[in-house]
Length: 131
Image (cartoon, rainbow, N blue to C red):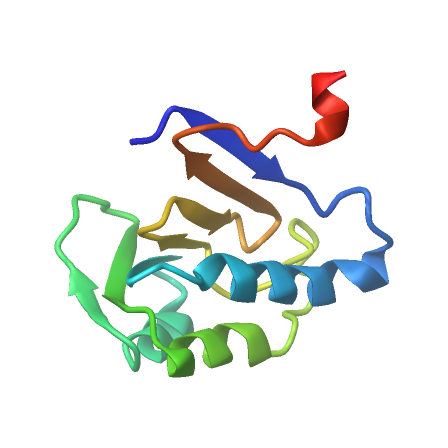
């Protein structure tokens, strides 16, 4: 595991800008990734079946859910970035129907895309941060 965690937040954006921005971030952060994991709750059977079109079940000890793993391909990224935005469920302003998406390059989109994280070996400082 890398040493630094960066958080990508959509919270400061206007609501109508969050989903298009999430799509762009997903496309960019998929670059360099070779494999993915999608985590879904057991009751999300429709989305588990959908994810299985791009991978296979991974044997994990998660009694309430399932994990699908596979290769990051252009077809997979197209699927992720072209699914329609899920309807608001009263809890999450979902960007994706998948509870969590992990790439092997250290990027993750979690809690239905409402949180995004990047693990990295060295922080990426802006010039402004050095002043």
